[in-house]
Image 1: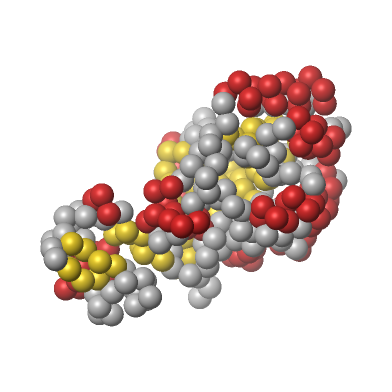
Image 2: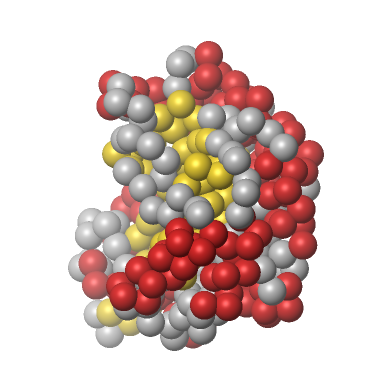
Length: 297
């Protein structure tokens, strides 16, 4: 039985497609964006997050861990990540909920059950969104899940970075009502430096999606020093102009996710990037709407 690793199931979400939605977050991503807001989604392997401010220093995790990854030293909790195998025993024992297993195996039927549990809240246009990480790294799993959900009458959206082979899109598009498509920038070299990969495949897949009837919502993370200048936004506008199936362009101001980086042991890699001012985001939105005739949200 095929399984994937999910690091979160977010219920009652309102920013990941129309209406109230249940969002499943898949582990694994082909990009390594320096400003990633979901760093726990980059690695395909399970991880244990440790939120030190919640720790009661009770020692229950140390008693439960079969690998000895948790110890109390001088009455304080010490977590040796090198010894951790992400079995989840510490999460179950933790009294303060300071420990959380990120990456639980799920079958298609288990994922479907999570979504159907909230179907009463989808009546006003809501539904399910597959996100990550990058869900299309698990395209066959997603296609089967989406097929079953469509048979259940659920609106289905896929949130993708676009950096996967077109065959992955081909698998899921027959069962997809909306594609949420990340477009971070047009300059290839700058994109490679900041995300670890070229954007050529992302732009090619966007061109292919334009020939399909499925609605596409473009999501642009506004990151100071990367794409918050008029030239970068104008380049994005030029790429998007005239695409009939682009139903919306959403500018998403960058917000620091330091607590997430700290919790999974990546504190030293936390990006030192500020949140862009509202006025800057509004000005960029105006350029896209007025200069390129795009439906900016």
